[in-house]
Image 1 (tube, helix red, strand yellow):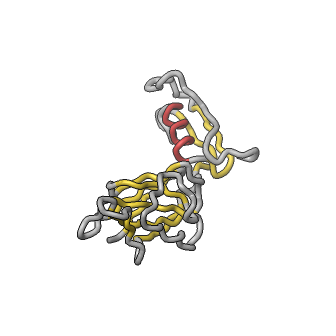
Image 2 (image 1 turned 180 degrees about the vertical axis):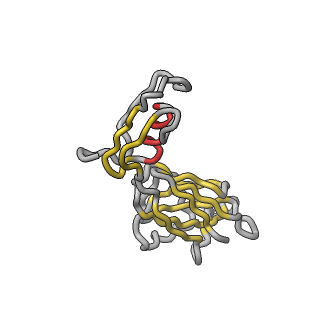
Image 3 (image 1 turned 90 degrees about the vertical axis):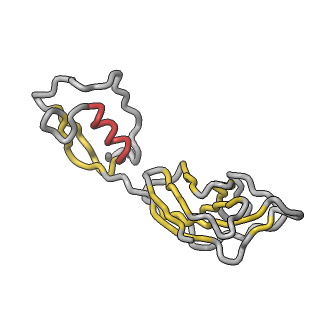
Length: 171
């Protein structure tokens, strides 16, 4: 059935309904082009991280959900799900005729401009502002401007500022 995909900046969560009759396991392969991976060969196991089929195996289990991580923001990825049985002689035996497939872009970094921090600002605390920088990434230069009414209430200390996603010399 349908392969649902939910993107983030650096990951894509996928989910699908189990086949009928249910397969023993499912192997998910991720590619960065629309070219399908080479079909898996019966009798060969492909552990997570394997790249021999023209993509990366991101999941190989009985679960119908997975999370592909370490991805690049604003990039299109394709996913291919192969059902298989591993409880038989000669297994695993893969169903290679029509794998589930879908594609989606990871989200792009989106934060830009001057963002105010304080009781009536874009963010009530520096903690919230830094969290937004880290979750949304920098699409252009960003400045955090502290309001004169800011008093530090509600902060979580220490406030740690790491290199934000999509940071560059210009942003």
